[in-house]
Image (cartoon, rainbow, N blue to C red):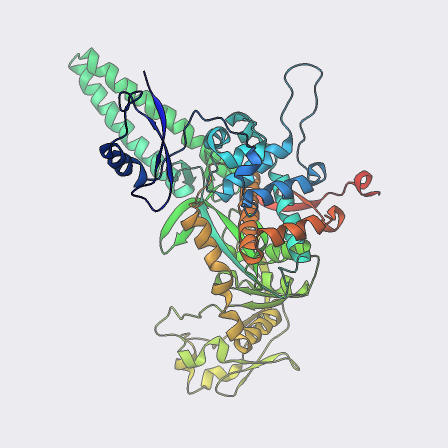
Length: 559
């Protein structure tokens, strides 16, 4: 049996130590404490921090474990501040029969906490609700199963976008967003679709050619086996031929789908995902996430996920910024991947100053135009709608608008400028590679906006140089540090919802670092969410393009 003694050691110590020895046969009743016992106590107890007894009962609450500066307190306060029905969350209803459901706010808290701490798997979040003291506090010791957790994220993508928009509004009212200069950039996140399951016309043709070749080969083997009367081999070859027929049907259906939709490619696992150029010649089936970042504290003010490159993304991103901040005028910075004349003109017409990097003009014909005679060296004269070439000659237009069509969705108009002086010009060989005729300049309908942007870029180049500082580190944090470089959700709408959650969490974490949790909580408590001012957007996907439908709830805003 165990014996319990309290030993007070005073002789050889500067302080009084109280020890409790629970060890079988170490000390016996009425035995006198010897120096050896004191030495044993010092060696085994005084030199190490003694752990707490696991069987010890304590009077303590969950709240005692959570420090006042713990981020989980802000997560709880933020979610409790929201009216989830106005954000578009599908609320759990009270049923007359069966088990009561969990509150919708519970799952929003779980997901914000999870993404703040690099956990987005519903199964892992379920485990954390059981063993994580912070989540126990946040959830009030509730432990929802992974199915319920996963379903919340799948059925509320639009509401998650609205939560991001509302949090941006809070940050602006907290004076953390200036709204004067915004930098836009995009990053690719891998989709839940392998490259093997992504097809274009060329790839389908290659597969069909292979099937035809192998079928011919197997038919020849089948004839040879039939002559030699080898039934086992005949059955084996016939199985292969049947399998090739099934594959041919599959590729024919995919080819038909491409023809009917007019798309250049199709993905069979996640229909909305596309093969996109990542960098250099590396291609991945992915989504392209856009982020517009305010320059004051590098906070994200707008985000949207698309399934095409940056070239046609500028104007829609600018519209999102204007909607989220509730203002029209600001300066936007973007790299040359966004240099699209139509997008730049639409952006400028919306009241935004553009500083988009200029694309390099490269002459692919070695015997053609030399650097001193590139189109940028020709001076446009607005008064008489003409161009002056480097040799001093004037190029004029007949005023006819021509149409150039890039694809089904994009075309533009332009005018041609020529001069008869080219025929006798002494520097013709430096200006053009044409043997017959002369130099011809094309001026598109968007030329004026492009020229205005070029002037902005050259005059404010120092401001443009800050673009990388403003927004590129955000994707480094999200993808490298947090490991959010892929998505397991399918469909553009759901992926949009997840990236809105990621950007909300990023803003939350950064604002905590800027102000501190206590000051941020004070601003949150004083904040009154204006759902009408937020102009909450519900996104529907039409032909894989995000189409904004503004939905206002009159009955909720009547007050």
